[in-house]
Length: 464
Ligand SMILES: NC(=O)C1=CN([C@@H]2O[C@H](COP(=O)(O)OP(=O)(O)OC[C@H]3O[C@@H](n4cnc5c(N)ncnc54)[C@H](O)[C@@H]3O)[C@@H](O)[C@H]2O)C=CC1
Ligand SMILES: O=C(O)[C@H]1O[C@H](OP(=O)(O)OP(=O)(O)OC[C@H]2O[C@@H](n3ccc(=O)[nH]c3=O)[C@H](O)[C@@H]2O)[C@H](O)[C@@H](O)[C@@H]1O
View 1 (tube, protein in one colour):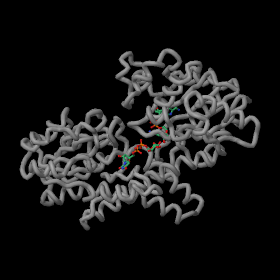
View 2: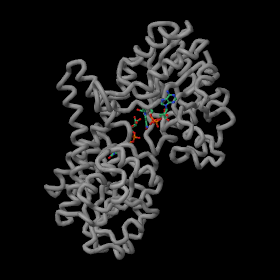
View 3: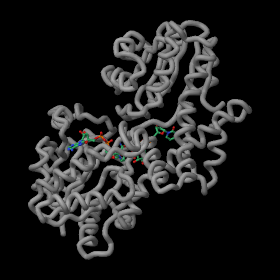
View 4: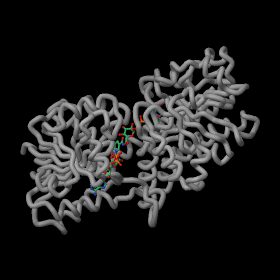
């Protein structure tokens, strides 16, 4: 079967970019991305393509090429479901904040709502693709809902987890290390559905890079991949603390171990802690699944990755306070970067949020600059923590339009996100504008210690 009409439910960081690339590479397929968030859909449809709601290098060009040709964004979910032969579910699956599994399990309410809506609306056979990251065996629940509440049409469920990283979404989608498709390999209809999705990716991905497995392996591989990646970051961050007390240098250690081809050089960058919407949520989800099967040692093993990450964020903030003579009360601290990594406007679970919260608890005045994050978002992130009232947050935190403005009259600078532009700031003039001694805390190992110390900064970098 050749797919002609795709619907994707969820126009977020995954649904938007993935569907834009499918549409770009498959002009004969009509792709409609739907969302209940009307503001988000309006932004995807903004005549000025630079105003699309997600900042990703190269994405606006892809959208400009395909939008209105075979790529559409809409709030009419029912119509898109009805017209499609293949439906991707790409809605959010956050950590539960209530009830059983609170703080650990994935909240599947949005997934279930999608399934019920598809079942209610569908009048022809559909292939339903799990694009969201889901606990292993979710496809079973989806199938149950679809088969029991549907109109008697046939549903095939596939798992097709997404491995793109934010900031590099377009290049990751153009050249994926692999595309993973899990399906029912035991039935003819299952194999046909798998082949239909293989046919979509085959527009630009070689078949050697398209891996097909059973559904459960596919669902579990996604959680496993994120757990392994996050584990590398926590491993290197754990060693960064040991470097600081021994005279070893984490950058040198990373290089030395990364040259071992069995270890490899990627994901060994020590940092102020990993952020992003997925690592923490997906590991907690894995821990919860292990616990629910009574596998407590397995659960504890993976939970340590999160414990280490929380420690890394806290110890960075604590180091800053300790260095500033054990008090930052009333002091002005400049935070450069709020996004959880460079080249994205996403701030979910960013280390900056937790470091700022710690400093605000110590009564610092925090002044933030990020090239792609709005003041509204920064305040919303802090309010969401619920540590203090919205009024107090607004009194203690300031958001400014340049790095220079953030650093003016500051006691210390905390470099939080590795934006390229921070490398080439005029650190001489920033130094001149700061109070002395001028402290600089590099949470990303972005800056040249020698250069900054020559200027006069008291310089601290993670891991040395
Ligand atoms: N952000 C990332 O880099 C990656 C995320 N993932 C996974 O992809 C999934 C989606 O993540 P994001 O795109 O980051 O989330 P997101 O929060 O940016 O987007 C999800 C969208 O789904 C919409 N939505 C929720 N329920 C809906 C419904 N019933 N009908 C229509 N729209 C609905 C929301 O309004 C929202 O716009 C998650 O499971 C995540 O774990 C996987 C790989 C990478
Ligand atoms: O499931 C997901 O959401 C995605 O999660 C991650 O992608 P993402 O979170 O967008 O970004 P990463 O590049 O993985 O960075 C995550 C965090 O780890 C930090 N990090 C990464 C690498 C490193 O060496 N050191 C380090 O501190 C980053 O700064 C960032 O805060 C994975 O890399 C993707 O493959 C996956 O699809």
